[in-house]
Image 1 (tube, one colour):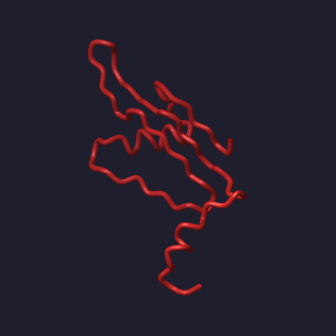
Image 2: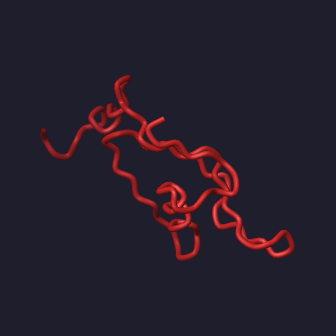
Image 3: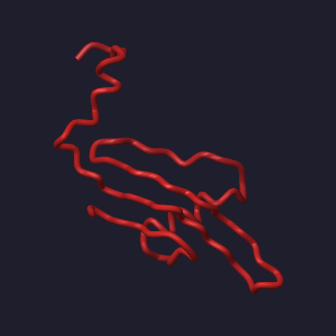
Length: 86
C-alpha cells in the first residue's frame, strides 16, 4: 500500500462486516450529592469499530480518565449505557 493513503482508503474502513467493539450511548457521570454535584462527563455517545484507532484528547479535568474508567467497567455511569461487542 502506498503512503499516504488516498481519500477512499481512509474512508472505506466501514464495511458491512465491521464489528462494533465499544458503543457508548448518552454517558453522563456525576459526583457528589444533589446540593453539591460535579458533572465530569455529560451526554457522550461514541462508537468504536474493529480496526479503528481512537485517541481521547482534552485539557486536564475534562473527563478523559473518567470516560476510560467507564469504558473499562471500573466505574458505572450515572446515566447512559455501555456495550462491549454488542
